[in-house]
Image (cartoon, rainbow, N blue to C red; front, side, top):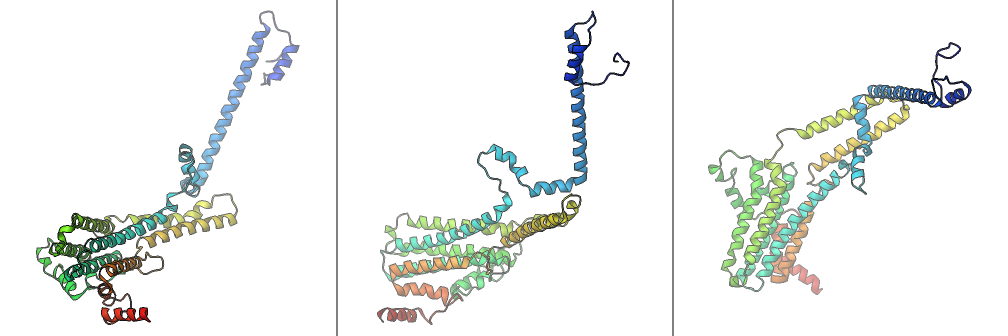
Length: 393
């Protein structure tokens, strides 16, 4: 208590100093002792004020969390990706906060397109290697061997491109395509569990999809047998390690085909993860207005915010759905048939360089006149004469 009998009140340090300059200190106390009491009182007051302020902040944060709710907090994290990648950005100097969802469509499109181009390039390399390695032998048997290998290579690539879109119902049945000659078509029908006798030694009944998946492997075996006929050529001793290289190129192509198609045919996901993810996205978008109802912003900002967020997520879902089946005849699909036709033309060109136009036109006639990819003359000889007349004219 003070001298006047009033209760002691908290004062500032300046107030205590003014008081010390005016009051008289008793004989049992010193000025330093009185100053220590004053400092202790001021420190305790500050600690008390800090505790009160901290308690107020905690209560305010609890109220905000209770007001926004768990869903709104999730929305804040989803809309502002900087919060998620801030720690990673600090750890990796110079990194940019890019969400994975911004890269997935481009990565998927690039991977699928690159893999398809790699398949086409491997078939072109195989046909080119065979034709160039045996060009020293100009006998009719050697020319027929090169022509058969070129046609079998184009045919195998054509069937693989058909299988890319066969699973989604956009492709033809691989043993019914028009590019097949009668001899190859009968062999495929014979070595088939549905139309042939191979079903007698099948462990279980196979579906049409499973048998269609095997057609490229059957054609690859036919091509291996055809490549083994190089031993009948007069120049077989001059080839050296080239036949082993042909087999390695063919194996690489079939491994690429297996990597692209194997998971689609035999590795189906047993649990509908894609459908669950799509359902969660739809629920999240439809419950977004409910989470925004407790926000203090204007209704206009809420409308634009919800519109753009919904547009972004539904658009991303649409792109993902389109990328699930990237092959076909739609405008956004990968033009795998166009890539294959470019390889066909390159193979025709190398056959023309080594064996002449008549032999190149035989391969072209099998791949175009029998199929529906273009208009051709009634025979390779007739078209060859037409081209020669145009050149001389």
